[in-house]
Length: 414
Ligand code: ADP
Ligand code: MG
Image (cartoon, rainbow, N blue to C red):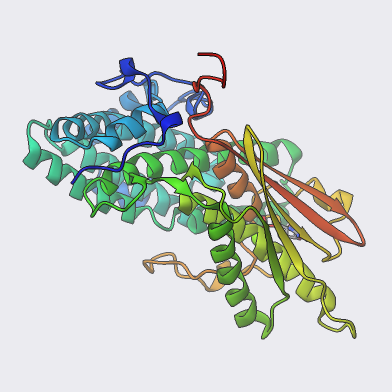
């Protein structure tokens, strides 16, 4: 079936149409390459059992290769015309690129402080990365369409294998921090090293899953106005409204009630974006606001003031503001909200089973909500800011860059 046409401002330049050789337009790559590969360490027990010396050597060799970034224009371009030839090239690219990225992450995991690197949950994650690396490496060269289908099935299984990486890593780091506190080894340097690792690790995960998901989606029934994972007429208003309903449902489940949320702004506004990313970010912000307001007003006589979500349309950015009167965050707390695991909620991690196929959605407590949302925003050149008035409330500003804006001709410049 023919893919829907791109809106006019989206037409990639002609020279990118065929096969662009993956030019980098400041899109993710610099950050993905942020960590240099390091020396080898030990791998997880699970993967040790199955891992031959040659696989370990392959991982080390692959981690020395540079990761190759892809431009969004390239992804949109091949997604507009998902011809067999394009899918073959896409599969070949991912076949070469994903194991390199996995190897980089494996090396990062091995180079963590030994107590963290050897923590059981972290070892499980290393096992998943090693298994996926082995799958890619043992996959023969992709020659024809049948190979593409087989490769795509393997890719799908690998994506599923990594579903619970975030809670597993969060749990591992939490255990490690507890251990450090117990032995008094905790230090500022260690914290910032871990923070840097997690930022790189999770950003890389977002990128790999986006690339893989984009490829996989080409083999699913075409959806109107979609190019792979990108919705070319994504409505921030609609997504925000959906995210609000989902967040309120969880709040209801937790507290038996949920504050009102109003969504304001241009209901007709559409932009190209990845709906799942946008949903994830707004969902996290609204959950935070709901929790703050709910806790503050649970005993109060007056009714809880509604949370406001405002969608604003700019030339460069679309900004979504989530405002609450939940009492805000203290300045000392504000410094820590971007650190993973900083949470003032009781951690739900002790009772979750990382082996179950899907982790339960929780109102709060992983502590990853804000830092991960900011990574999602930054992956597509956006950003997330939190401004708080302690004693009153919090404003979160989620800036979304209009995708593909970089190389757009300016009005009147033609
Ligand atoms: P979690 O929600 O799992 O605790 P987050 O990263 O989403 O993790 O938030 C970290 C912490 O920041 C929260 O535990 C809370 O203390 C604080 N916070 C975030 N958003 C708000 C808000 N809107 N109002 C008050 N505190 C907030
Ligand atoms: Mg949260």
